Image (cartoon, rainbow, N blue to C red; front, side, top):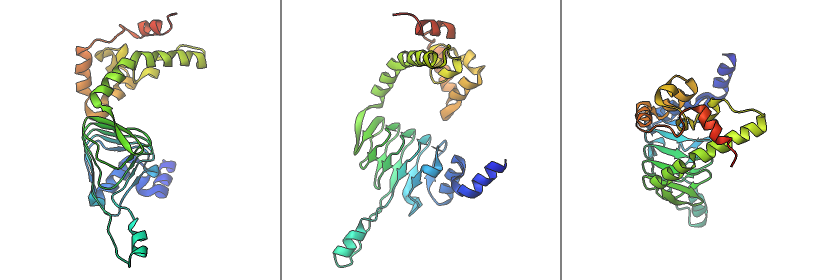
Length: 237
């Protein structure tokens, strides 16, 4: 308790994600529901004119994200060209269901559509269309969201298998099932998942637990149980 109080005094509005989102709203920024700023103290969101920034629902901002609604390049022009001031402020709009990777910079005037993934280290200087994946400097469209979904779907078992092999090699034992809290749909049904905190926590993310459960009931897992999954992982090729 004392540690939390000290942290709040030291970091103030950036003491925790919820406090920072509340602070931004108080400053006049438009922010929807289920918006996560995972590392407030490492995040820079332009407060020059907070009302110029709009963030939709279900947006996840990871560490080191910078969102700018203005720039000060006009200072160079002012010195060079007779003291004239040429303003540089523009709205930034981030849609619904957006993931912004670590150390991404979003510059002024950018609109990010709905259902967009932005890869780590991207510099976003132009609009990002909905249902797409962007990455790079400057950021460009890599693929559609549907193509990314299929790509991730195809890699689920191979990634989980690699984790199982790696864990056994490093720890000298087979992993407990909670290690696979992001891959449990490979071996767990809906009812079983709900009984375990580490799986239920994943189901409740994004505020659509019921949708996940309906999916699981309509799509049986690849393996009948965790033991079957492990046997396949450790089966000799």
